[in-house]
Image (tube, rainbow, N blue to C red; front, top):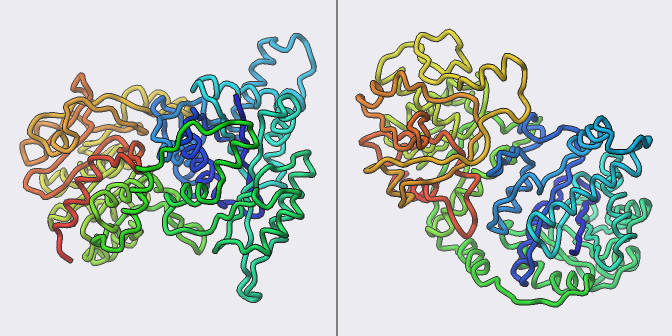
Length: 538
């Protein structure tokens, strides 16, 4: 088994996740089995307890593991489903070591940060490879080189390299800024981030040089000289129109060849035809524009707008649009502003209300749903977006004044959405971490529904992340007045999909279909949504 560590320098958010996903794609296309693994330095046991604004989207796997958004990149680029073995936080690693100590698994030894934490990290790396029967394990190290938080991951890298010098490579993703007041690309920050790596005993084998534009030969020469590398090991990684170009840029820069040389491997095949077709379609300037609005509350971070909270939704829209010859123009709408000004919605051809929690700004979301229902605007409600669609329908069609979800109004007269029985006990005990209804659950689609027509089959499996559910007490009355229960759990007890009659596209899902959308395999619900949006003239 071979191991490739991927670190980042200079700034956070530099694109390590996309780089790791791209390398995984390229090595898979070269004929190797790969196992990507994200090593996150935070002390949370998983990503599920963090606010999306703080750390971006929580990406849920089939087995229910709540992970970092980079696992989404890995799945989308490799078209493979991952498991809990493909994510390790520093919190989970410390917890594991402490549990072993409590179980006397260290035979009375004094348990210390070094060597026991790095050894547990190595154990996780080897488990990730074995669980996928991989030829190559790709380990993305979260954070930025030079930080205290990720130094133990780098120490594990160093120890594994000492143990298996021919089987370990290190790729460093760094940044070369072009300060506007200088007008020149500067390599010094990148040089210093390599030096930070050297300071903890690691010499990178390859440097991926991120910048606004391709590196010139002068910058390549300088970076190679001061990094102690051959010029061929400095791979230019300029900004691109869309992230799906990145693997092809790397391939054209001979990254795959350089990696295989470092690991003494020979290419088995080369299969990037479908991916090249994807990028060609994505860059087709003849694509027809469609205007899509996403109404939510996890956008603002200080004075800036953060798309990371809904990255899988955004990518799912893109996947469907690319293969339908459409160019999505996506805009963020703050739900709180919609409540004061419904005209903010008037120019959109399709609107999505994504997942979320809590009471803040839900009236703006409910106003959005009402607008889509009454004006026949294609609507896709995801998780909370489905629950609030039920609330809106109960209030404004059934005249259930004050109808609500008990998450927001525990004493509402009409609890059309209520807490799942097993979740109530967990919340009373403050047992929050990893306890929601999580992961992939089967769903049976009902005949003569839009959903079944789009999926083209009766049995599906989709990923969930919720504590509240459709209250079956109101099911009959809701259906009598035009709401359609399009899909349920196999036993019929849990409502998974709702639709509306006499509407071009109004679908709400209790699950998160965006988590299973892939660039080469768009999700059918998003395909149906964008196609419906093209029929709305604006």
